[in-house]
Image (cartoon, rainbow, N blue to C red):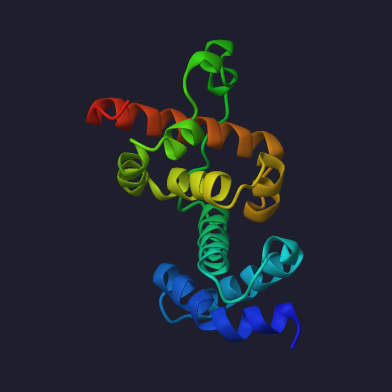
Length: 171
């Protein structure tokens, strides 16, 4: 059995379940799950071992983002505007990154707790970046967005994580 078949056998029900969470038991849910399968097949190289927690998470994130894309196309969810002011400022280089906070021995639990409190989009992109060691270009490919949008979202997610951790007193 090849990797694609293993992914489908292991996570096919998960894909449909995530899609049904957005669309109920409708043909839209089935369409979203099929679109997710296509995106997963385009990113088979990101799946090292199946089954694994990493593969499961990647399948769920891809499916969720496909569903959000469908809803945005229907104008039910607004697209986030990307402005010049949303670009990472040069001063951000002096701020500790989310990865530094994540791997610091004394803040690892606080970082996990704060990531769980972040909006799904931010938490997902941090998990892809930190836990799955993906670069913005790879994240863009998985999420079906531009490289620039992936970089901006990752920057915003890091900033949100740092802010939460500072509020909690972890940084």
